[in-house]
Amino acid sequence: MATRSGRWMPLAAALACLVTACGTSASTANAPPVGPSAPATTLPRAEGTLRLLARQGYAEGSWVKPFERSTGCRVEVRYADGAESLRRAAGGYAFDVASIPGGVAYAVVQDGSAGALNPALVPQRASFRAPFRDPAAGRAGARRYGISFLWTPRLEIWRRSIRKHAPATWGPLSWNRKSRVGRVALEDTPLEIGDAALALRKLRPALGITDPYALNEAQFVAAVALTKRRVHLAGALWQLPGDEIDAFAGGLVDVGTGDWYTAGQIRGQNVDVGLTLPREGAPGEIDLWMLGAHALHPGCAYRWMRYASQARVQARVARYFGATPVNAGACAVLGKASCRALHADAAGSLLKRIAFRHTPVENCGGGRICVPFTRWEQSWTDLRSS
Image (cartoon, rainbow, N blue to C red; front, top):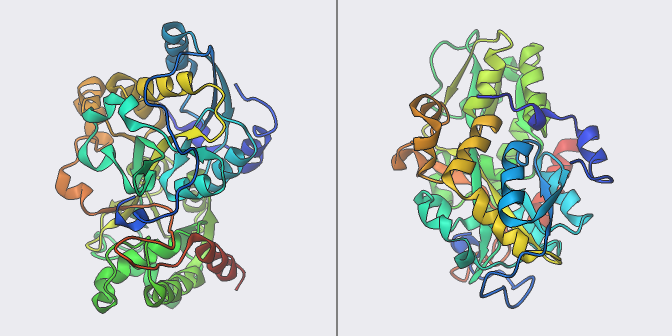
């Protein structure tokens, strides 16, 4: 497996790429329509150009060039990394297709940057594992906005020098213990509030939380309170996994969240860490391919989504990038060792314990009114500055 070097690109370098070319479930069921009212019903002709916005590592020449040869679509790539960097990039670049984390996918739609698409024009979805064929992060009511690509979990990482055996719960991130103050790494995202809500499903079942990213007022207040306790423990806030790796390697933190690849990179820095899925479950992130609201080359965009949905392509990107493919056929291409390392053959029971992030919306289905993402963003800003 190659290094995920691009994924660790410093934020300043990622933002520099924005100015020059660098190479839902019931929770959103009643969300207001946004974007084009009539997605394509048939595959548009190939226009000859594709303007692609992607994470570093998602558009390497070894798999972009075969796409160009087979479709005649010349690829222009801009890169960004991290959810907020990709969201900002999407707002400042007239892309045809972009890789967007599910947690901010609908926010990108609401920003006016991405539009509705026709998933039937990407028939390769039929080969996806069940949770990824029609993910909550990529839909709002009858409209669809994203095609799944790769996914990662947010498992609990802990330094074995403070605890030999795997923690059963998310307690080290929740309890206000003096020994943990300043020793916890948290992701710098408003969705940390939802990650706390996930723990509250077990800690406070009377709250009735089902979807940690669709919270009513009482649930949201409780989740913010728990997040405040977690932020009090934080010694590092990271947007790129490389920042968390550095925090562990530098001895700054003892506990954090990440995937098996992140844990492996920390171990590669001679830090003995464990990785576990606590009994409350864990957050997860699905990267989606999204169609630009003002895409000039939708024919090439759909062809890219079809191409990127193939098992052999996902296997190549997954092996290079270190995330998990959604196409069930990718394991046959990866081989047993890589398939096992990436958990691409994870049992359905494991996937059911992953709460995949999506953008919180106000009209969250079943007549429920939930706290919208703007409130999550403001609360996170307040928590960070408190």
